[in-house]
Length: 302
Image 1: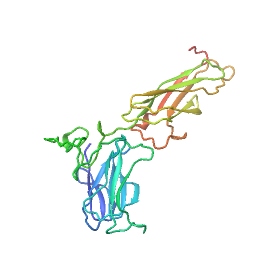
Image 2: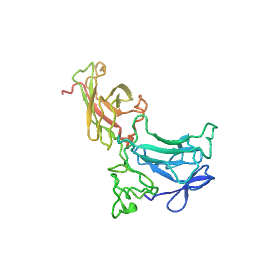
Image 3: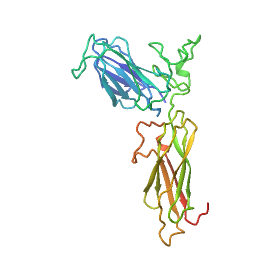
Image 4: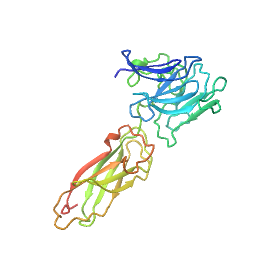
């Protein structure tokens, strides 16, 4: 895919496509310097980057594809050449935003007092992806500095480095998009308890490149004809990349008289959006969270 080009001016923040057509713009307030910068980062590891920008009165995060304002907070600034950055400031394998404010020129739009100083904030549940622990200069572009602070004698071209071709966009140490990817494998229905119960098991696998917390919910369903919720269980421990945990549900399951030879179907979903999903869990591929259906019948011998 071709990269886009971002401009911050005195009246608007604008994104252009590679051919010069305008992708989107949002009105801003920077009549003073008209030369502030911005940075880019994919906080959720879903392949969709966000834009970070601070004008004279507010810090905003815009959604990359369409410019929807995802966050806005008062952050006053005389707007010289500063801009917000994303870096892992505390070495916890999660990104943080570093923001500066000053009070020598402007007040907040809502009339509240202007802000001063350096502010660092992160996701309350540590669900932002990893990133590097360095941002060393105004024109930062990853290939200009190693993560340990060493400057390469001959820096690689950012625009020809796989996974880059960017500017002022920090990345993960081992890749551009690092996030958990929870998938369900080995879905099984044991009919040893028939005709009064059935034992359902499935393995929750983290196939992503970042850890997932404990408490990931898995919902089991009877999908014979209509979809009926059977119950919900959760993982008991954090899952690092490549790790998995087997979860089990044994719901009451009454087989109607005369239907012991019938085929029943079962399915499961991890972090189902309609069944108390775990808040703040950002996966790189949420579309692969289902397993099944599988067939089972009471005469089946385990």
